[in-house]
Image 1 (cartoon, one colour):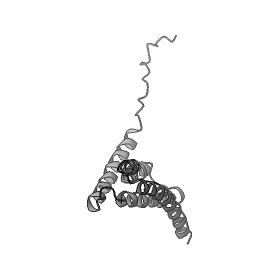
Image 2 (cartoon, helix red, strand yellow; image 1 turned 90 degrees about the vertical axis):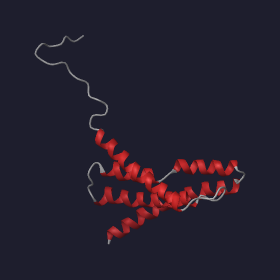
Image 3 (tube, rainbow, N blue to C red; image 1 turned 180 degrees about the vertical axis):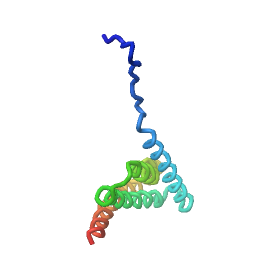
Image 4 (cartoon, rainbow, N blue to C red; image 1 turned 90 degrees about the horizontal axis):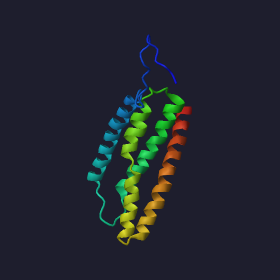
Length: 146
């Protein structure tokens, strides 16, 4: 057991949020921007009930491509400020892409009896999102090598 020393103030334990406040704020700010952009896309291009959810599909594919470009730029080209990745990568792009809506869309399609469309959407989104990241990373590296 330690006895407090009369000449020293008692030690304070560090807050778990100490130093993380700016990061959390940037993720929240970026997430709001990304989610607003996704909502705007859904308003501009609504999906018909029972139809293939093209808006969510393209939002996810485009978002994955941008993530590919962004990660190459901030890890191989530019020494970004420590808040850039949380703001843009996690916040904006995390809020813009919507894999939770992807899962809900699949469930709705299957529940409505559109099993083929739901399974096609499941596979197409997975393939297209992974392909978009790979193509974006590859193209960005090639463009930067020139």
